[in-house]
Length: 212
Image 1 (cartoon, rainbow, N blue to C red):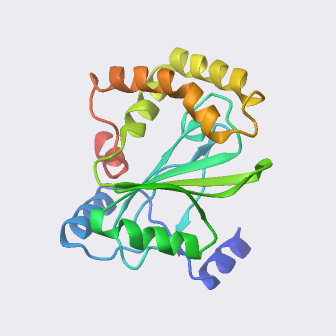
Image 2 (cartoon, rainbow, N blue to C red):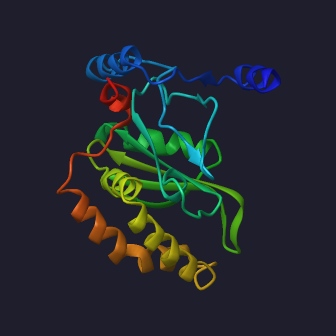
């Protein structure tokens, strides 16, 4: 483990602080005052039912954006492809700068609209690589995926329905990422709208506060 820490620090990465009341407040202050917080906590990554032991990150030129772990690997107890989905919320004026930074670091821009950019690393025309990272860059407040994630985490029976659907579509759309996403749309939209009748999604900076 120490070798990992040394390598990450040598490469310019910063170890993320744990999510506590104190660090949550630091995120609020840095966001309001647009100050850099290089060691800001990140969303817990739950992969194959296990949470990470530590996390490293790099800020995009001091941007105090919110970062969330979404997608199937963020939902406990269900099967997931080896794809990590991260949602990053930024100020509208920072969208293009963040896109350029990520492209410069090896990410491929898959789609772009005035308020959204989708990038990934590890997806090819021949299908998924062994490891795939998908980054969804959005303007602040555009985070419906958090409602869906939290609803399924709170309703294991619905999460299992989602798992069955995904498994039924996996081979059929193995080389068609857009088709795979579209085939899940009705399910995702139905439960996202249902979730909006429940408490607001768990924004990562408040997770520790909710335990108080």
